[in-house]
Picture 1 (tube, rainbow, N blue to C red):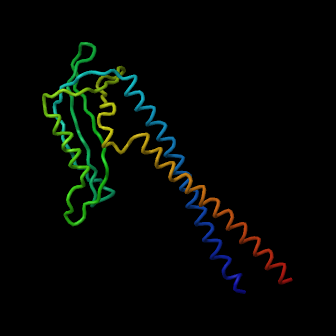
Picture 2: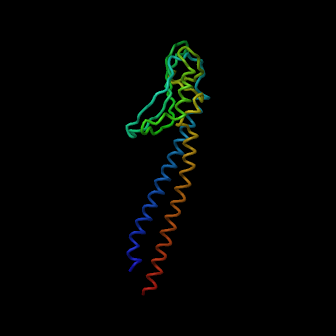
Picture 3: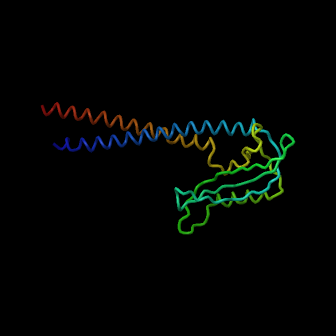
Length: 195
C-alpha cells in the first residue's frame, strides 16, 4: 500500500529530474554553438578586419540597468573613434560589455567597474588607439582584444560555461534514467511478490 502512494511522488520526482537534465543539456549545447560563433567572429576581427590607428573621440564607463533585473547593473565601456579607411574618414563605436552586478542597499560598485573606468580614462579624447575595422563595412570597429580583460561576451567564456553545464546535464540525465530503471524494477519485484 505504501509503495503505491510513493509511486506518483517518485514519478514526479524522476520527471522533474529528467526535465532539469534536458534543460541543462539544451543550455550547454546552445552555449557550445554560441561559443563557436563568437570564436569565429573574434578570429575574423583579429585576423581579417584591417588594423588602423584611430583618434579617440570619447571613451567612458556606462552603467546599464537591465529591465529584467531592477536592482542590478551591467558595466560597459563605450568608445567612439575617428579613423581613415580607403581615403574616407569614419566614426565608429565599440561597446565592451562587462560583468553584471547586484547593487543592493547602496553597495559600492565592484572592483571591475573601477578597473574599467580607469581603462576608459586612459583613452581621453584625441588620444590614439589601435582598432580593427571591417573591410566590408568600415563603420564596424573592434578593439580586437584590447578590452579582453573586461569582456564577458567572449567565445572562451561561453565555452567554459558550456563545459560546466553539459556534464551536469549528462549526470542528471543518467541519474533520472537510473532512478526510473530501479524504481520500475522495484515495482515489478513488489508486484511479483504480491501475486
